[in-house]
Length: 248
Image (cartoon, rainbow, N blue to C red; front, side, top):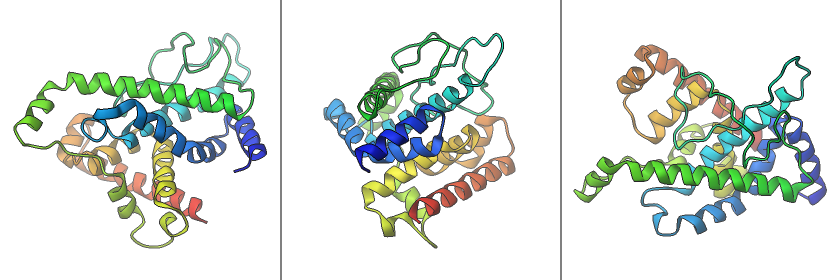
């Protein structure tokens, strides 16, 4: 992507264009990965993975851009946009929207969406989101004393495997891996997963990345097993369609 193309995509993303945001996230995926690797240091691959951090950051970025689009619509008595939600885990469906908070380091002036003076400022905004999500995940990891104890006893934790999920999604038909490098294909998967509705994303992640049984997912969500299978099927279908579109 040329600098002129990036500038145009930044302009579109600032207006709430999620397609432009996905293109930018894929373009910046490698430098953002290096930022996370440098910050993680000895924690890399032990308690946290680069992909987990970036997945949370991409979800936050999509929420921010969507809220930006909403904030630009005329609305009497509007109190301004809600900043991107933070957290180390995907929000559970049914939780409802997080309450509005004052503008913070995500770059939201109170009462308006984010605006950027070109790609450099936009990248800095993304970097702040990534670092924020990294801190949240680090705090969550430190709270998981029980999991750490299980590791010490030789019972490894379930590990996320985005390449495995990518293989499941692209085992037949047109695949991004045939037209992209592994790095690009993982970036396509992470950004596509971040675009799913919260319930679908949560189910896909719990089932295929964290290896949570369907019955446990159903209990977490207060839904039937069949409802979980339906959410999962729809989420996988949407991911396949998005990845096929990117590959073209």
